[in-house]
Image 1 (cartoon, rainbow, N blue to C red):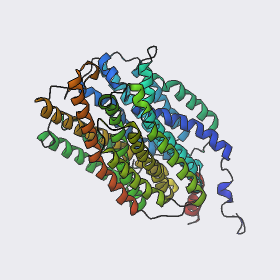
Image 2 (image 1 turned 60 degrees about the vertical axis):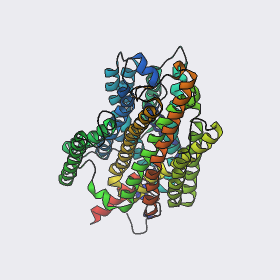
Image 3 (image 1 turned 90 degrees about the vertical axis):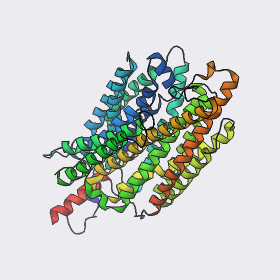
Image 4 (image 1 turned 180 degrees about the horizontal axis):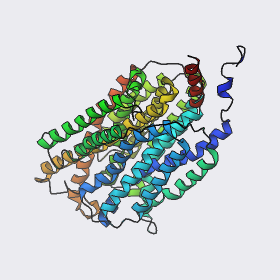
Length: 521
């Protein structure tokens, strides 16, 4: 290179054209949608699934949690492998695992095999969730990423919130049934694999590597222990009990060992160096809180619609649309504005404030809340999450060196999923405890209406039905009242993030520049 050559020319020479990027994104977006859908599509189908397979109430939560747990625990490993191996091959592998898990789930004869299939689905979904953002960062400069991040944020939100609608329609359609909640994603996953094979072209950097299996095992073990504890506490044993002490101490001990192992590993799963960046640390904290608010809140709204408001699964799914549209519009518009003006922090702060406001509004609902008012509250929550979720990833990706893009992106996805798992588990335990307490107050015993099983409202006499609907309305509003302060912590976290101009280079171009700079020294 001569002294007069444009500094960016060698790095940008192989940049994908906008048409190539859009073609590659089509496969990523389809894969992302079906992997997120897997977590939520069963929400409205669970009562029917549990009844058909003769499962207990504890299985109800585990069908959701098993998939989230596997997704959460494996995200860091997928992210690390993306820094070492072919991203294209890994993302196709993750989709293949998802297809396998979906087929097993769709034909399952019992709840035990269903839970195993949900774990397989979760491992595949974890790869898809982490790798899609990593691949996008490799193709597109942060300065242009807002536009595309908005699309991903919209797909993530639509998959999360539209899942219950799709599940409800499938359950209510006699010639399909709940098994199609799992099978519906298979053809789309196969299409995504084929599209990625044809359109995704990224350079493969081959080097001698060593996967930190000890770190992966300790992280997975520690996180799994804490998530299992948050699922069982308040149901199988008291929050303040020896079981709680043992599981929390064990989980924290494993995570402490994981930190030690990561500090010694040549190729750590989660490089501790990324936490040197204040922006990365704060976006991770905010991602956990977003996960708690989004997953913890939306999973139980479906139950509220069906029991407290007496809606069918299909109608319950349709009632989630205001949140979908709020998230879709805010995510897309914010992404386009960030790309146009290059400013992003204001959207994080606004998103956190609006999300907290949405949680507070939903804490006022009851069995007699009008559908119009409920729709407004849900739209507010959707707008807040849409402004916040993907832009946290954008802020972190813009902060770190190209060599840490995969680990940083997967760390954010990991902690957001962990927040979601904790939200579903812990807030579900709060809901269950509140329902039991209210049943005891109204009927004199917690077993009168179903502290251990969700009541079938179609079999209840009118005078009992009114009380049961009021109980579930009150318990759900209390759930959001608990979630609101958690959401407000995200406001504090994003206020301390320092805004940095967005880079004009893609991840691959930044890597080339960093490598050239290292060689020069």
